[in-house]
Amino acid sequence: MEIMTTHGHLELPRPWRLLLTVGWNLAESLGERLGGEGAGMVTATAVVWLTAAVRKAVTRTVPGLLLISALVLTLQTVLVVATGSVLFFLLQFPLANLALCVLFARTAPTRKPLVAQLAAEVVALRQPSRHPGLHRFFQGATWLWAGIFAASTIGLAVALAFEPVQLFLLLTTAVTVGGVVAGTILSALWFARVLRRCGLRVRFAQS
Image (cartoon, rainbow, N blue to C red; front, side, top):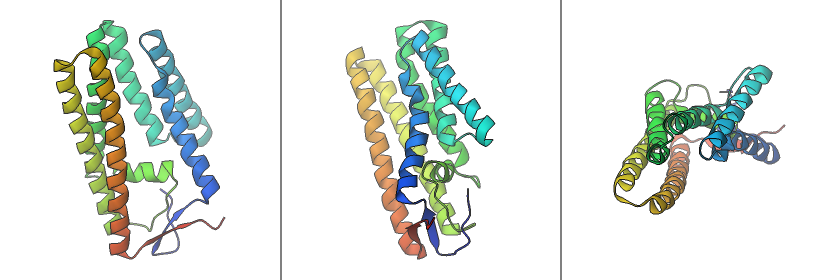
């Protein structure tokens, strides 16, 4: 994560650069959504890993969001290709959420919680070095997202067991979108509260 030299502020890129950065990272991660069953998922997995390899070769880093997408899509593809079963194709959805839950929970108590890494990569957020209040927020927000994915896993597993396929697919979309929206809103409100309490401000970079 890039560190500011001016204390008391968090810095974002200028608006046009912020939009470009967010759009680029999201476009890379959306590769996982290109997959259908079988060959389509294999192709999408190959594209995502190729994108990661190109980023590594060019910038020597792989964005966390891209890596998460590649790992989740690989898990889904292995399940579908190895079994050829409709049940396992459907099972990929709760398993993907479980994988995300474990990934977020694993980094939450560390010095590099995943939400902090994603904030630096996706929106290029710069923050004061080793600020304890912000670090506690990023740890807590990472636990929040782990909890959201855990709840999604349980909800989708129950729906898979008791609901017909078409309804399950609709519920999958609703749960995924609802969880992301709820998590984003809660994280943003929590972040704003932390900024006020710590006396910090967010500003756009001057250049």
